[in-house]
Length: 346
Ligand code: TRP
Image (cartoon, rainbow, N blue to C red; front, side):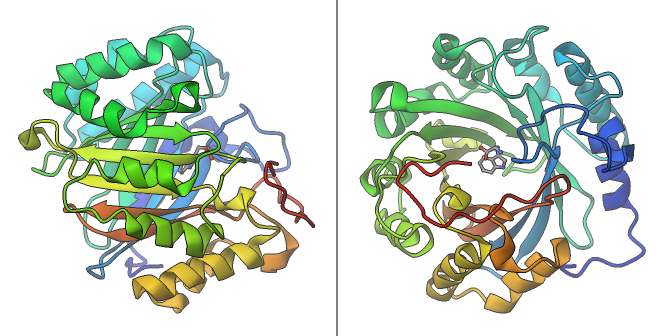
């Protein structure tokens, strides 16, 4: 898929290690741990990033699950995976080490403590991204953790930029992920994600406006095509993210909007149509979406909902593009809905 040579064993090895004991477990047995990576508790989700430039990347979001899972055991297994990857590939762990004591606690709250994404591009070594959970010490601690994390990474000004544009609706807007690229390039990023409960297009247009040169109208057009309208999005929340590189002194270089499309369609046939409507506007080839779908499933699109879990729009100077997130549905396929209500949720 996506031009990978058949003899490149790295991606398969890395995926096996990423999943830990969960990767070796027969699918006939129940999941070892209720991972929130995907709706059916599979600790893995695929995505394909389509860049306007023609670049493509396949990514795997995953949670490492040890044989005897538990909050602390999962964190230890994840860190073992990371140490091993750092020995094998050229990873930069200084930024991880600068903030890990903030986000890793023996008694984490919320839905996860540490996730990874493995980014695969043909002909290149896998790149790794790590996700921390700002809610890990409870809702009230999240702003402080994020502010301190940014400060330690030399991005103090970023906090104000983000709160002024994306955290304007009280408890309805909250920090959901704090992510780091672990490669050593000049564009190695810190990424901050904010979820917006019951948002309308205006909420995320304002959020996109934090990034110089980004046209918020593109956000509205994306939601109209892929989401079916301007909201409110009262099912799973829309999510904003900002990318920062150290050199930019707290000014975000990119904005992304994530639409959990599965909550806003009756089935995957409808989700595919919506994504294709956006692809047509963005000049992306429909056949590439179908190729990605065919790589993960052969079930009829109308037979379930949630295969296409999210679709995101990325805008800014580190590249413009669209990413489609595909569930493995390894444990379960969610039944199609007959009616999509405003608060539709699985
Ligand atoms: N499953 C979770 C959710 O839907 C986390 C998640 C997985 C996620 N992939 C994502 C969130 C892509 C945003 C974008 O919220």
